[in-house]
Image 1: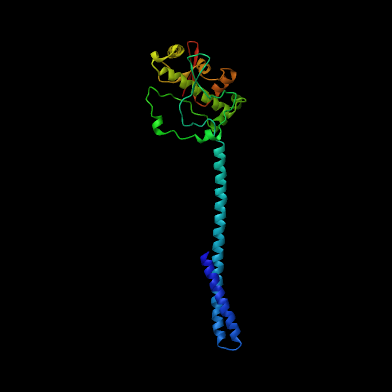
Image 2: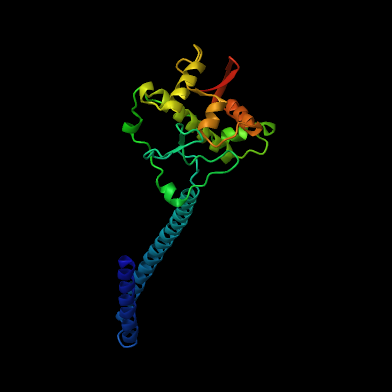
Length: 265
């Protein structure tokens, strides 16, 4: 801007000089030669001035484009912030436990039933943080595998006859419930039997009895675990969800001894 002001001031001085020469030209003839030189110089200054104005206009155009691009980016970021998926992994705080209908059973709170879509408010969304590297370093004894959430492309790849009326959010709510059951089951298995109460000790024995040589090294749940630790119902809709999870390579079935085991992949 200062450059334009300098040019404008210079042009104004030249015009004033020319005006003075025009006033004197009627009296002093030799001034006409000087007048021509000043006019030529003024023409050059005007060309430079127009060039500078053109550059400033081009720069202003780029700045407006940048402003529009930044505005759109800000709107996209706000949309992402306001629509964080409810199933996105969050930094885990202290576990909240509750009792099921069985007095010694440990049940995780906050699991949405399959038929409803979980809702995350802005306060909860703000808690979504990357899991620190130190937090994921667990011993083999305490590690529990979880099913990864279903992505939108994976959901869209599921045949419509298999999806039925199940929504994307309902499917991932079921994933959360199954992960809750797996976590609760193996939390009991990882504890010394002598530290468990009566009902938990019975569950521990049942879990051990359901293991076979084919389940060694794998994590699995059965329908009784789903009923024990979550609010999901092992009904026809649940079977449909299992079919979708098998289609997405999250589970596989292992039958034997009159029990269907759902093994995590």
